Length: 131
Image (cartoon, rainbow, N blue to C red; front, top):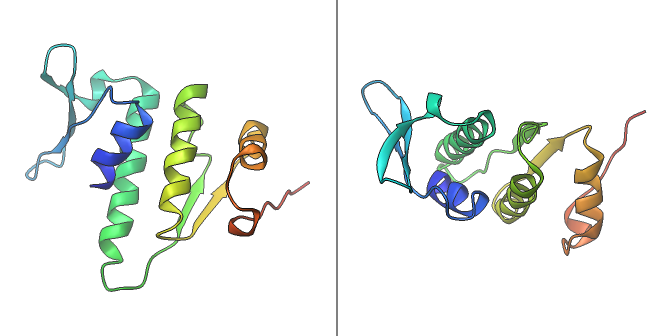
């Protein structure tokens, strides 16, 4: 659910289906142009990073099915994303933050700017700048 919802939202519907081979754990997506299964090694670096970020997020959620939600620690996860995907990813993780705590580390000032301009209630996040 996390991977499918996330990739659909962040890629603006370009990719919708992600499959994981249970034997090899290889990940692939369905290319919308030709409806063919494409291995992640044929995708851009940003799309691969997105898929593996969503996989890690999904694993964290599966591990927390006991009732206690695990926090997500993300260290510059959008480095390879273009501006549009970065914004979509920020919106998606903002939605996920209602389900679990997200600690986000970045040196990207655009992300700080996004947070200050977004409609996120200020009590829902805290910015700590290190010098």
